[in-house]
Image: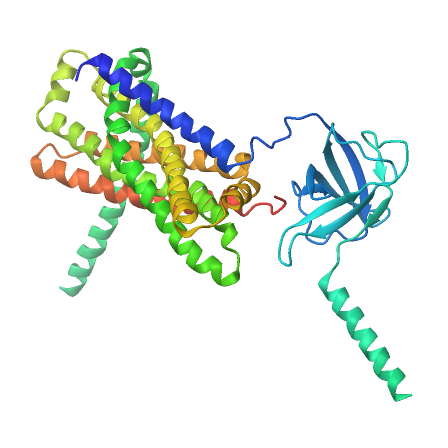
Length: 157
Length: 268
């Protein structure tokens, strides 16, 4: 084995190694979706965010239009402040509603945007006023049980 | 009489412990000296290149084939469990995360230790046994700079690349079995994988792991070779020790690194 052949093989090996890393980053990881597009930040306050996580998708009509950039707790209003970074090409009216929804029964939670009818569009740094919190299973069950109990009383009377 | 025996035993135990600690200190000093004197290896990069060829390129076949099969087995076993919960679409996540985070660096490291680490030890040990290293010293050539450092850097450079190739090949194997053979939806396989695997958390940490394993394995290999008793038996013992110690080092380091990397925050 002379030296130029070794060089060739080492070259192939190193190139293949970096190609594998690139494959992992692009095909298996989410480097490609890592906001290469221009984006603008919008905030929303929720009474309860449930299991929402940073980097969860923001969808409108089922299409991913952005990602959750940051989740903070506001000590003044005791609410969660969720920052979303939306893609620049998707503009939403100022009276858009933000809801925390769940994909499937056990799926991950995401923010769903429903466009309103206002002519003025949301700008970077704006806040979405109309929000709907995540549905917490325990609250749902207790509501259901209270309703049942109330029905039972009515029937007795 | 009995106390004398007991005393001898305790003395032997203490002696063994001291010998191990002494060896660890010597190994650390050796690593320090090696890094300081690796100028030659980096200036005359041809030497290191040759070692990358021996440690990396010649390990390619075993790494690629094992990666493929590990990925295929992961997909089979993962599908078996996931479909009980009706979550067979998450197969891609399972395969990719377990490969990138754990199996890629660890299994590639173990294979690297037994394939390349043992070869490095045997080669350096045999050079010592046949007094080639002493001959170099006679010619005022530092054997650490000329023989040990290129092998060390060749191993350190090769290991992360091998681990990345292992992971990529494993994901391809998982795709072959999961999508082509079992029939999991290809779109769900890739998109769920992309949603779950984070390049800065999972992939970068996997690369850090493989770099650490590469340093540990090659360090142990070159040190055992350099420190081998210069006889046939001594070299064979050193080779065995390389494989045993580097396997243990990989598994122990993996635990420490995983504890540091993946248990910190859960904000991801």
